[in-house]
Amino acid sequence: MNIEKEKWNAAIASAEYVKNGMLVGLGSGSTAAFMIAELGKRVAGGLIMKGVPSSNVTARLAKQAGISLISLEDAGTLDINIDGADEFDAQLRLIKGGGGAMLREKILAHNSRFNLIIADSGKEVDRLGKFKLPLETIPFATQNIMEELGKMDLHPQLRMKNDEVYKTDENNCIVDVDIFQKDDLEELNRTLIQIPGVVETGLFLSTTDLVLMGKGQTVTSFK
Ligand code: 5RP
Image (cartoon, rainbow, N blue to C red):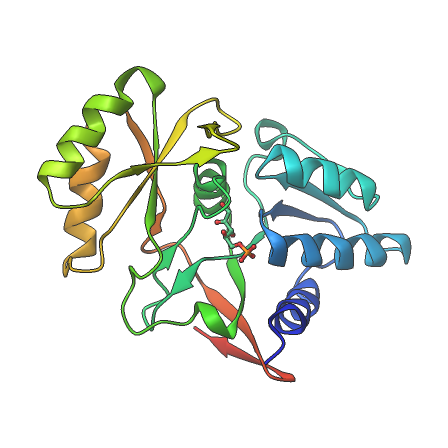
């Protein structure tokens, strides 16, 4: 199984959904990067579209690919949002935020008419939670939040990068938690988001319209 090829195939298939004149949410991560490259090719070939990037990295990639960018404010509602995921289940519920961009990603998902997820076959799971769930937290509150999460048996870990506390594009922290034993994810998400200082979670429970998953040489759709 060639994971990179599966990502490519899903990304190329997703680009077919972008039509002339569309406002497009551009996700983050390696699969989204393939999609951005493919959209860039299509723009060079005459496709007219504008993108709203979900991260600073994505903004840079989109500009390099020749895609015109627009702010969310100016876009209002997006026609389509295309993004990757760390895990998805049969109900199209997602864990996202492996790349730390889930706050803006969730905002784009919320403001889009159609949400398309692109993934390789390693992302399909029976039960969410082998991948640790990222929580975006305000630095001021992060230590206290971690103590609270510890008492909930969620085994919080502060995300680090190069021996320093990882910071998101919004200058917040990421705390990764273990939710594999939790059965009611909707209830868990409500509890987590109510902790003051938790800005967003990487659980995307009811936003996804379609998943395109590369598997071997083919692309499978889930809706
Ligand atoms: C970033 C994300 C990504 O979509 C997720 O981490 C998947 O990344 P990749 O396509 O590199 O596997 O949620 O915040």
